[in-house]
Picture (tube, rainbow, N blue to C red):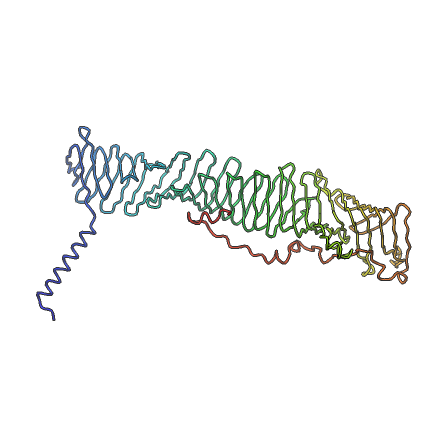
Length: 555
């Protein structure tokens, strides 16, 4: 057991240590550095030492690195508190200077309240407000009435704001507005970092530039370089286009915008839409590119024409806009379906070109005629399958209805015989010209080495009369409801009408015949391949920190 002297010594040591800790943690007393004079008025200001300016000597108070200058100060020594007014200057090292008409400061809590024409000065910008609260312990300053920040180029205003001194960050809340000579930004809440001129906003935000408008509810923006990333209901109005997506990127200096996931680019002048999961806009080049489940929607004959391709590219000024699609092109309209390797749509003239990739030398040598035909562009008008080396569709731009059809090289028209269910009506030639009537294919002219196989039936009882196998230089075909109704031969047709039993099965198909019904899109979802449907967009990350901002800049 310890003796009494040892216990007493231990108690004295603990009391001494506790006393030292208490002394170390107690707040420092506000110091009076200078004053022109002092007085007291216990009736009006009980417990206050009134420090006055006299003969040019102003009142200087000091507390933990902060120097406060004023014309008069009411200093309450026991409360470690003062109230000062008259051209007040609050200085903290070389980083913070504030001027105001009046200030209250508590040395115990290190809290200050300044009011009356408050100006917080920094090397890069100044804050103006009526009332400002400062928490020196947290190195924060905030206002809850209108505040204005002005730097060399822009002015920022908000109803409420907080300045985080250590982070060199402002947080503005309610009616936030940035006025820049080149744009105007409005937001519900905005975090602004002064050392890199970057703003991070939350809530409804708009940025209106000279030739662009941006809307989003979350995003980041370089206020100096006018570039940023935008998320949550983000929209960019740019180059007469409306761009939407889960995540948008914009860079004004490069005339560039990009979109990721659930992308939509609406061309309001040409009444067209392009959707996909990744898109880029190059304003200086008058071009836009969309990939990943890309599909364009154009209005023809008061109906939507859907065009899918692995890659869609829109180029040219508004009056000469051209849409190109590359690889696995598929088109869908209520009365037309199609497929090709590439497509070219002139939105000014209404001309659509459906083209194929050239066959390699080896393919030319080893492919059968049917295999070659299977690589050609193809259209389906109702039950009619039409194909050839090149297909051209033209619309009347005044009525916005289909006007004409031309198929050049290896032109085919194939229709499955609806009565027998096994035979096929076939027309093959070197050139096909089609004429539309009220947007419907009505007349078809086929020329150059024309060959025909046609199933003929009686009008009374639909009995098969025979199978017509004819060659001629040119023919005319009339269609109704996208079905062959009548065929007229020109220039010395040569052929025979064979009874069903007399025409061998192998002779009932012309050379190069291929029935491609399995390729025909039946619904809009058929526009997309298996690979398209397996594509899963990556989750869009949120840019909520300065470090995350660069992650969204295209490399």
